[in-house]
Image (tube, rainbow, N blue to C red; front, side):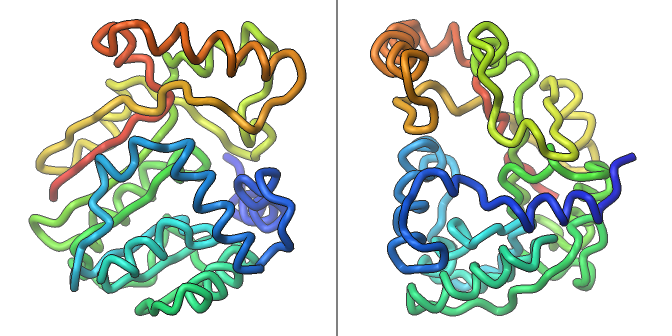
Length: 252
């Protein structure tokens, strides 16, 4: 099994979506550019996740530089963030300060051994974290432990049977963070089994093609000008199972 130390070292070297901005790392413009890029790429996210959870206690596991965490905080939530990477937590603190908001806590730590008491949070949020974890079952069990009865857990993993994975293989274009120490894809059935401890689980395939800034050259042109348009002509009911992201909305 890949060690947590190796995973921490990787994410201390890599900032997610860093290539999408030329602004100095840690500047207000840097945070605004990455927020704009993320929510342009993930247009579905605000339709499935209500970031206006006033006075609810929310834990984000794998908070990164705090992009989603700041949205929750601006929406009035009582937010705590945790991440393996010291560099990410440092940037998240700066992000919070630049946006004039506050959080209950930001700490370096392991989502597989959360330093919080049982039944403490109303919501546990981990978007794009499970697939990079050393032990996904332990991470999910910890999220369940710290969640209040009746609380909500929101997870996202990569879909093994997705349009993006198929296209990356055909076009020989690497997926983001393909060089990470751990990167997993899951089927719907595997994902549901992983989340079996929750009282209810709703899994929604999402993340369909939108114009990309990541890939350039003729492949990028072909993708943006031909593939995106053709794909989105197809009935969504037909392509729905092949979304790249499997969003899970769970209740304890």
